[in-house]
Image (cartoon, rainbow, N blue to C red; front, top):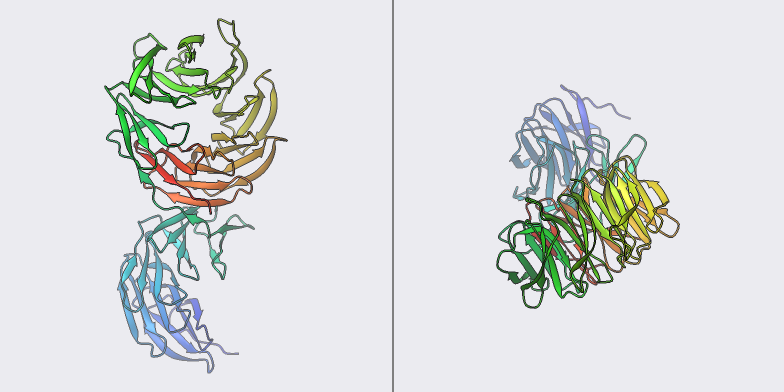
Length: 546
């Protein structure tokens, strides 16, 4: 055994050569000391000019040693001669952590003031400089050099995709400040210390989708939905026009003119023959898709300043339902365009509207978080409410109309029988708000997301939970299911869209956006995802499973 003297200053970091031939240590003071691991004597004293050396890294081949600290620089020495081969002055705070690529071709550093850099060795060429984030901590490099993981002070882990020089993933769920990271030898997973006594593990093989396609729009789009065949999408600007885009060509098909004072509320016929547009004048204009002309105007509200807020159609194709800003609900027969049922509002706006596939019931969620389910029966002058609940934040209905689910501010999900209004299931999604809900096209599962970025999915046959998944680092604003039900997409405030396997809860792919997505939906019978981002810009991208 040997006892090594560190000389002046306290040693706080030790690294060794991969072949075990030498040992290097540093800490307080301006020197990095190197000892021969056979004779246990000092062979080099390297001056790095830092008040404190905070990080050391060794090339996997052992041919160089790197050091950095609060002296604002990173230095690299040749391990054969201990001659400096690279000096980098970059961040005013100096590096917190250093990590080398397996090939030894480049060196990465996380800086005190929240930036990550990577340099080629020995040229010093800066070839990766992601945007600044919060103060970073530990660094881990994928064995193949394809990604770098960095821990941050905001308890998240960032995964940087080196091939395209941009952030690939933001991993959430850690409670520990600046988590400690560890990567699998083959790079297939990444682990971090989370709560006391627990470790979080992520699959790093998740596919990065790439950039979204932008649809040209001069004004902010408030409403955005898909045509029934999935070949076109339609958007409406508030107070302005309605535009239809060809999804395959990513260009406008046509604009409806003249300006129709759209409120942003939209609905499309089940056969695609017409588009219903709510207006700021309290009416609904029915536009013929083939000829681009207004064929009929339906009046929902005759009070000044009242606007049509929401529109939806029944799957059977016979009914169009609408809600105005005063909470009035109207259901029109699309064969005659006459109102069949009406319910006066009570001064509260409607934030969600669902009509059953056969048009027998209508559910409305109001701005005061009250949910009411109305039974629509032929011959009734008014619809009679069969169920009422408060604190509701999101609703979704069964494809066959047999039940309606509502999530509330306390993280609970309640399911009601729409025929009788009785409660058939109740379960908790945690203590956070239920932000969004969606249902499989065959009704086999129900999914809900929370303000904390969690995703829950229940099997509707026995109402047992299938999985609870995490991944988003922000509120999940929207959910949408693919037509086949094999996957669903989520849109969150962490500026990402995430594709989930509905059987296992595993993340299949992630897409990073420049700004936060507000909505998302999947085009019928396709793998195309579309929606609107903050600011009203529509987006669309084609997700190819596998």
